[in-house]
Image (cartoon, rainbow, N blue to C red; front, side, top):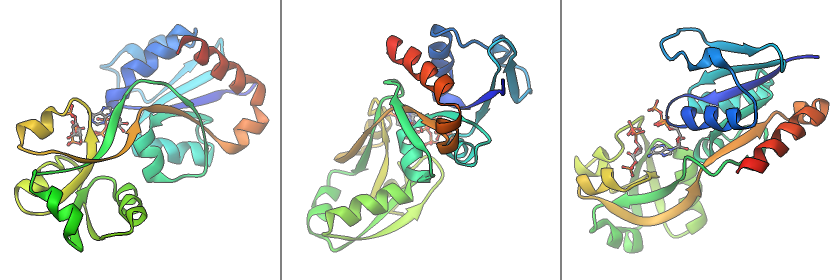
Length: 211
Ligand SMILES: Nc1ncnc2c1ncn2[C@@H]1O[C@H](COP(=O)(O)OP(=O)(O)OP(=O)(O)O)[C@@H](O)[C@H]1O
Ligand SMILES: O=P(O)(O)OC[C@H]1O[C@H](OP(=O)(O)OP(=O)(O)O)[C@H](O)[C@@H]1O
């Protein structure tokens, strides 16, 4: 039997992903050693391999078949736009993609023809404003601390993830429009879905019973 490989997202989603897999008997003791520099982990009994990667790299590994299955945020799936199947909503990592800014920017969104939008998610932002059809946007790609942009005058608004809203509140910003709800999803390589359909379906069915 060949190994099935999982690409899991490092960081915020990792703990809940591992806990969920554990609930359905998919365990990997080695992976819990957070001090280790080891990158790939094996469960010989189940013939499974696991690795942790940066979120935006997970869809890449899955599209190319280097991983059969991935767990990644919906934001990253939409932004990366890779060829893969999105098969299951895991219901954690819940947050919302929003257009945010200072209260005054609400007027700009209604009336101003051209606005500047800072974001880590240029594709999602472009598509959102394109579908609204009423505005020309200049998208400015940033890599973090997006809330800074309207404060220092780099942009009028931002498109970013809001979870508790505390980052916005602490910086005098607010949600102006909601783009879409987000959560962690399971993605599957297109060929693996055909070739390993039985094993993958069994894993997905087990996961569904604990969601
Ligand atoms: N408050 C939040 N902020 C950001 N992402 C969140 C939040 N809550 C849930 N998520 C989800 O967790 C995923 C991974 O978040 P994480 O913070 O680990 O990555 P990141 O912020 O993109 O990475 P990095 O900190 O390395 O830049 C996101 O893609 C998103 O789907
Ligand atoms: O609504 P909240 O609960 O405040 O969470 C949202 C914040 O968390 C994320 O940033 P992250 O911590 O990933 O840091 P980053 O800005 O460097 O990406 C996101 O980009 C927001 O800034």
